[in-house]
Amino acid sequence: MKTLSIKHLISGGIITNYFCTSSCKHCLYNSSPYWPKDYMDAATAERALETCRRLGCKSVHIGGGEPFLNFDRLKEVLAVARRMSFSIEYVETNSSWYTSQARAVSMLKELKGFGLKTLLVSASPFHLEYIPFKKVTGVVGACQEVGIYPFIWTEAFFRLFLKLDPEKRYSISEAQELIGKAAFQSALNSYWIHPGGRAAINLKGPGFSWEEIVRVHPEGCSELMDTSHFHMDLYGNFVPGLCSGLAIRIEDLGRPIDASRYPLLTMLYNEGIGGFLEFARKRDFDPKEGRYSSKCGLCLEIRRFLSVMGHWGRELAPGYFYRQFHNDPEI
Image (cartoon, rainbow, N blue to C red; front, side, top):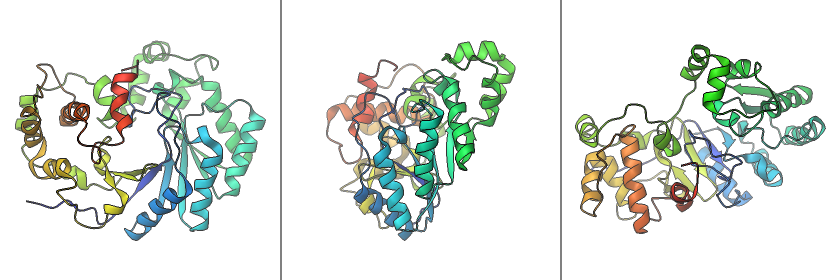
């Protein structure tokens, strides 16, 4: 049996909170207004950044949820990074917090004082369903006034949204119709979406049967070892391989993962989706006759089933990730 071990971290981010103003259809972490308003504290931030440094990662970004929803705690996290001389690449935002140019300028000046140089400002059709575009352009303008670089993700959608009424919110179908399907699709093609979380449920496409998935993916899930875009969260969890809803405690990084503490992760790493499915079927999981977006979509369905059983708290975490599928009216 192979042993899963996360020994080196390449590039990643810190999830300060899962609470968000929106329930975007593509959200990898099921962020929404229905999460508790928990936020990363200074001690957890320090532990996360110390672990990053020890395992070779010298800089991270900060995301959520929406990090600006607890501005004082965001400043605390940035203060920890500054004290540790740890580089923060950027903070992500959906701009929902914007109320006026003066307030945005004042807030960003404070963050610049903590060393922030770049703000990733989302220009997304998924966020446009919840947030009028005037908030996005307002935050970009405030960045320019303060001297913080606005990293607009994506520039293509930003340019397209300039054609719309900045006061309104638009569903994806409405935006596509007004902008033009060809231009909208071209921009969407450059918009990276990972097939996990809410995206695995909402953005299925033609999909695959569970038999096809098991046949095409007979191997173990080596993606669990991928640290090219990792995340650590406010609860002290490391998310292996962008597999949201799976967790390794930060203190267990840098050494072989104990199979007795992480039996599901060990199984996925060694036996892959086929072994995981067989394990779940022995516990009365019934795979759908329908289609799954990918092996990640099937894995998520299995984990949703197991989470209801309530016996996998360490690995299937945070628990609210799974509760979103039951509590969130958007799903």
